[in-house]
Length: 190
Image (cartoon, rainbow, N blue to C red; front, side, top):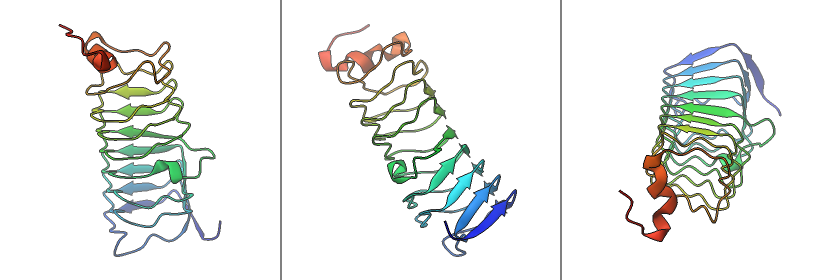
């Protein structure tokens, strides 16, 4: 990877559409209230970084490395995480808008989503085993051939998961979530 190296720096209220982020490796950096919307982030390396209150909607993530990243209160609509560098990929999301995001065929074991909006997100063929969806809105999210074994969806809502087309062994759901598992049977659950 060619580019510069940045360690333990804070970037606050920067509009990266107007002032492009220098291509390189960012280690232990903080991005606070920055605008990355539509920005080309291909082949950037982010390790141990925190993004707080940022807009990353429609940013390009081709071969982008995201290693142990925390996203808090970020707007991240339409991102295609499947195009990221999969080596060392790990992140958590807290209070983020992730609608229309693509996680196709990704290994996301143990990923934590807290209070996130994941409407129309695509988890087709992803491995979400042991992941936690805490108070997430999963309206029209796609789960097909998805591994949700030991995943926790107790407090999430609006999901539709076909137990016959997904691995859900030992996953945790609340009684209120039963319609999301049995919807295809058109049962009257009261």
